Amino acid sequence: MLSHESPERSAETQLSARRITKYFGEHKVLDDVSLNVMKGEVVSIIGPSGAGKSTFLRCINLLETPSEGSISLDTLTVSVEKSKLQNSARELAALRRKVGMVFQSFNLFPHLTALRNITLPQERVLGRSREESRERALELLRQVGLEEKADSYPSQCSGGQQQRVAIARALALDPLVMLFDEPTSALDPEVGTEVLAVMRQLAEDGMTMLVVTHEMRFAQNVSDRVLVMVDGRIIEEGKPDAVLMAPRNARTQQFLKAVLRQ
Image 1 (cartoon, rainbow, N blue to C red):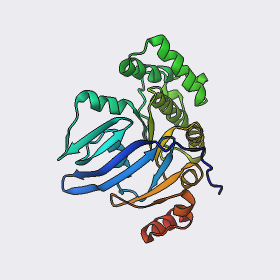
Image 2 (cartoon, rainbow, N blue to C red):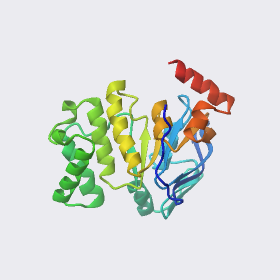
Image 3 (tube, rainbow, N blue to C red):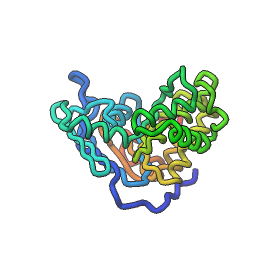
Image 4 (cartoon, rainbow, N blue to C red):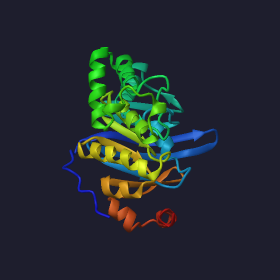
């Protein structure tokens, strides 16, 4: 496989997670996880099921409140002490607005068309007019190759098309960072390639992206960096070829052998 030749990256840190710890009851799901993501960087997170990868993403955009730690995005820092957020509601909303997220399941409103799924959040969150929101939504549907599906409902779209609508919806809020949580795991491989192509284009356009994925080819070809998470900790990180082709950690070697046998 060919390595991803990334465009020149800014030295500016876009996203920083510091010492993120998360408990569910007595079970520690995340154990002191820290990560910096540079502006325009694409970082893939791989690892076995139950490693805490999805929980880490959900902590970054505050769908889950960390037990301890802090998250910085652009000029805003959100801190958590003893599972209590230390920031105002306005600051928390500001951070959430700057982080787009695409889930395993598409989470589209079934009673709204593709176009309306993309326009409604713009009107509610950003205060855009219906006309302005529609213009932006159509632009994004063209970007993901689905302009002809503007008036279709989710049930009239394939899984891959629904996921591309979900990506367009997240982009409509003009996020600084995009989080992807196994975006192709619910799709057939052939359909999943359509979604990966959109993500590849976003990467080429310079979008800062943090991607939890089982797609090793995407991780190697598109990522600037790959992290391996096991038991709530990052055990290895580096350039894609170094981590995926010559891993140093024995647990990483074990995981990749299992993945490659599938």
